[in-house]
Image (cartoon, rainbow, N blue to C red; front, side, top):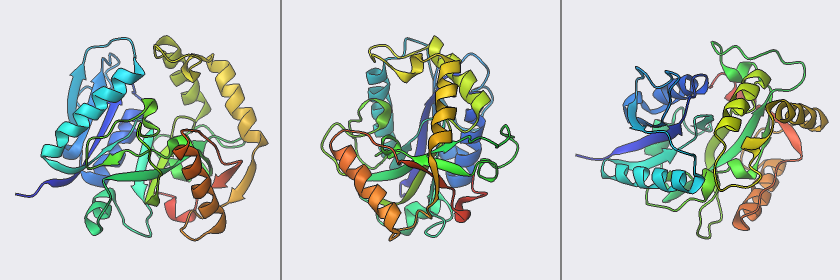
Amino acid sequence: MKKSPLAVVTMAYNEAVLLPLWLRHYDRQIGSENCYIIDHGSDDGSTSNIKANLIRLPRAPLNEWARSNTVRDFCSSLFISFEYVLYVDADEIVFPDPDIAATLADFMISREHPPVVDLFGTDIRHVEGEPDIDLSKPISQQRKYSRPISSLCKPTLISERVDWHIGFHCLIRDHRPSFNGLYLFHLAHFDNNIMYDRQKKRNASAPVGVPNSHHEIDPQDFVAFMRQEGANLTKRSVQMRNGEIHFEATKRNFADAIERKDWSQAPDLWRLPERFIGLF
């Protein structure tokens, strides 16, 4: 009997808003039977009666190195049954370029892949003039812009044991990313009200051993900064297709930054390409 092509893993704590979106997306992409949630002590009911594989851990102070190593070891254990494992946070939606494949399942079986597959990451933003999000409708029909960020270009689709840096933003070993058709859409900042509430939760459980963590910023200050930053960014139409000059230049800049263990952001907001609208 052959191994299954892909499992998806997340680690979550009290994600009553975003975890249902995560589950809905990855159920469509690969089936909930291939989804694994490491629940780090949720007490808000968000992991009760869910349609996925659940691993419960008692709540403890959030140590980012311990989290990274725990996720690494759990993902590695899944190789007994799966060819590849994708780790994503609860606020991260991954899917292939629809020009290449309709779902992650199709993407995995349609081509060969290196042991580490890099995601091109971009941060969905709530810009001025957009209404509050309606979670019953596709997000991509309500949010028009995102900002590509190198720290979201994560090397988290793997077929071998790897050591991740904290936050899963890069590997500890030297690695130059190559972007080949997988996209990560980050939902942490897709609605100002949800962002405010999640930042309050972060304030109450900020990671230990990480000085000056953005989890410690006051929620009102955090939302005000994100709104002001978004208002100051130029809006650009970029189709995010291979060969497109601006897209290729951004991928090279991001690869350089990640190779240096440095981080950079696109200097502008990119309009969500038409072919992605309706997919999440």
